[in-house]
Image (cartoon, rainbow, N blue to C red; front, top):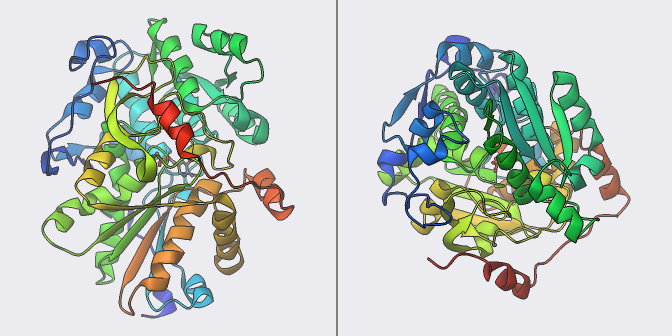
Length: 449
Ligand SMILES: *Cc1c(COP(=O)(O)O)cnc(C)c1O
């Protein structure tokens, strides 16, 4: 293969026009979401308080293929299809015998994979007459993505941003406000949940779970407002499958197939978007290794318990069956803010229980080392979240055979995360190894089902 093929670009007319929904193909059906009070399966009517009908239908759909509406395709074309790039310099630097490719989702307006679901979520809400969307954001990428999407469809947007990220990463909230959205550091005084937390702990730096509680409360208490989630839910994972579907075509164009698919996991949406389109091939016996990478400071897949838990701290969301560290778990303030979530997507956890996913966890300094190597070889600066995928891809590539293909998902760029890289260079990054007693204590608060 010559260098001419190092950037594999899909022609615009080859962009997928349907998302893949894995639900009909799961070896065991998903455990249903449960009402947090009665513990009965939630009804579409209950979900209708915070979500539009079309997204609830997608959440529960058993259709394998879901058409992408034309206005969503038009918005996707602002940056899609995204390139698949051969990381030849990185291969050389680590002495890999295999090929390494990365699917570059950093080229989107928000700089990450998140607009892939923000755009359809804003669009489907708009078609049902919703005027404003509320949401939470960790590192700020989801808030940026949703703000971009709302600006495309003339909608208002309110973002609750985890306070530690609001303070460590001020540039994202500036970007969010420039798109035309409103952003509040969470915990805030604007919701009952936020005010209560500030009363108990005035110095609270927040968590994704807490910010979710605030955003859900905002939507539930305003008629013109619905809630959006940037990860975890089935419909979010479905929207992200455009990533894996494009990757499949791009590799096939070169006569290649993937042997290892690698991604980082916060709530699981970018990783799922890459691997799910290959699920049927794996179940049919093709040897494709799915590798999930998460922070050792927030190890939900590798050390969490598979059980029903709330999606948020205030216990407002339905109960979901997932690998969880407990909704009361407060992760250490690592720089990969987008990976600080106590649970994981139920679809991903279902596959994990089937033994279909190899999950690994890494310290943040090792991930920053990998990110810096990527910067110095391939030239681009990855997001701290993405550095977890790079670290795992390097580990996998070092063990892979000569003709194998390692494909990792480059979930976002790090150009607004320079303060984290500064702390890294100054040796100011801490590694957090979580004592089992912390996990045990947080799990005690999970509902008994
Ligand atoms: C949000 C985010 C993640 C983690 O979220 P997932 O739902 O697990 O994909 C990873 N990388 C980047 C750049 C992000 O913005």
